[in-house]
Length: 365
Ligand SMILES: *[C@@H]1O[C@H](CO)[C@@H](O)[C@H](O)[C@H]1NC(C)=O
Ligand SMILES: *[C@@H]1O[C@H](CO)[C@@H](O)[C@H](O)[C@H]1NC(C)=O
Ligand SMILES: *[C@@H]1O[C@H](CO)[C@@H](O)[C@H](O)[C@H]1NC(C)=O
Ligand SMILES: *[C@@H]1O[C@H](CO)[C@@H](O)[C@H](O)[C@H]1NC(C)=O
Ligand SMILES: *[C@@H]1O[C@H](CO)[C@@H](O)[C@H](O)[C@H]1NC(C)=O
Ligand SMILES: *[C@@H]1O[C@H](CO)[C@@H](O)[C@H](O)[C@H]1NC(C)=O
Ligand SMILES: *[C@@H]1O[C@H](CO)[C@@H](O)[C@H](O)[C@H]1NC(C)=O
Ligand SMILES: *[C@@H]1O[C@H](CO)[C@@H](O)[C@H](O)[C@H]1NC(C)=O
Ligand SMILES: *[C@@H]1O[C@H](CO)[C@@H](O)[C@H](O)[C@H]1NC(C)=O
Ligand SMILES: *[C@@H]1O[C@H](CO)[C@@H](O)[C@H](O)[C@H]1NC(C)=O
Ligand SMILES: *[C@@H]1O[C@H](CO)[C@@H](O)[C@H](O)[C@H]1NC(C)=O
Image (cartoon, rainbow, N blue to C red; front, side):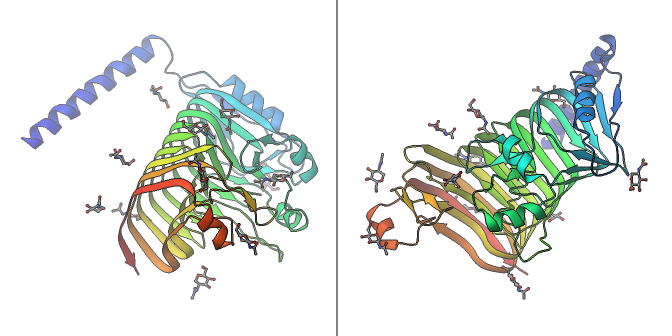
């Protein structure tokens, strides 16, 4: 009986696909237009105008394709607002290098409105497919050294989504982000896969805050089949992240897969629910599963750790099958995040409720 149902469903989908394909050809929309992005290929001269014009020329076309050629470095020296993308395939086979002009970026990167994050570019629109096996290089070293002198330096996120829907991002190598590697904001129905993340400082100043992914004001996001080598959260669910799936990741040297921090901003309501984390391998990480909420009173512990007094809930979070090797704390629920004064937290407990947390099948190897 079960077999019969499956067979009928499969032929029904095949028939639908055939109709859609024929309709596309009839309207003349199935042809592929390719825009190859030219480059100075000298790792110095700005290529952002060429990038913008290729994306504009091949936008809005079913099958429109923009190619960043292999063996070429594209230099980006200007902030790019890429929130106009519709039905486009962006194939990055070469390297995109963001300049190390920290003064320019601090003045011109897009402010993202949360924890002082900014970004080199922001991606938005719908029907966007990014792939190609190429590299995005955030030139992080200057930022790690700058942070050591100024903790308030506005550091850009390497890949920022702001209002992107129904899109996929896959097969990319991301290196040395100044700050988090991804911020997924205001977005829905996004799948990331085949992403490799590497961060390393060559000076005595560590690469700070290099989270793999942070999700924010977003739902129906999948992050899968990727390898992360970093020193902060592997994935972190920031305020208003719902229906997020994380699976088949390898997280090396990270702080684990975290909910939060939540409740940092007084009076704001932060919601994280319906999260499914499955088959994640944690190697040399400080935590496996972590939930961080601020106390119920705004207070300042240090320049970077100030906040508390927010409201909200954490609900229906599943961590299933965590393969762990050299993980310091497997599960940590911290309701006094960003504060070292336990008395203060006891007197002002966090206003974020936590329920429906299920961690199962933790497998040391
Ligand atoms: C781009 O520059 C690199 C490094 O100089 C060189 O190896 C590569 O062949 C160049 N690519 C093209 C397409 O000329
Ligand atoms: C997300 O959308 C909100 C509401 O439209 C807007 O205020 C905000 O700037 C957008 N971007 C981010 C990163 O939150
Ligand atoms: C953001 O930067 C300002 C200084 O520009 C600082 O006062 C504030 O604490 C920072 N906020 C966070 C959350 O780091
Ligand atoms: C999502 O995008 C794909 C192209 O990547 C398109 O074929 C599909 O129709 C879109 N779906 C919706 C619901 O917009
Ligand atoms: C998160 O969602 C809650 C409930 O809808 C809303 O009150 C709050 O403003 C949202 N926060 C952000 C940062 O969008
Ligand atoms: C679990 O993830 C690993 C990659 O880390 C993958 O090789 C393996 O096939 C996944 N297992 C399942 C059951 O999906
Ligand atoms: C709990 O979250 C999972 C994963 O996102 C979702 O599939 C499920 O429907 C949620 N359960 C409830 C009762 O909301
Ligand atoms: C265990 O992981 C920690 C990082 O959490 C690392 O500093 C340490 O070197 C690792 N130990 C071994 C034996 O690899
Ligand atoms: C800790 O918090 C309590 C309650 O707010 C306060 O009385 C005490 O002075 C604080 N201790 C320190 C060391 O700041
Ligand atoms: C938030 O927590 C504080 C300290 O526990 C409490 O005084 C306050 O009433 C709470 N606010 C809400 C809206 O629950
Ligand atoms: C937690 O997850 C495990 C594994 O999926 C399941 O067997 C168990 O019933 C769940 N527990 C609760 C309380 O939902």
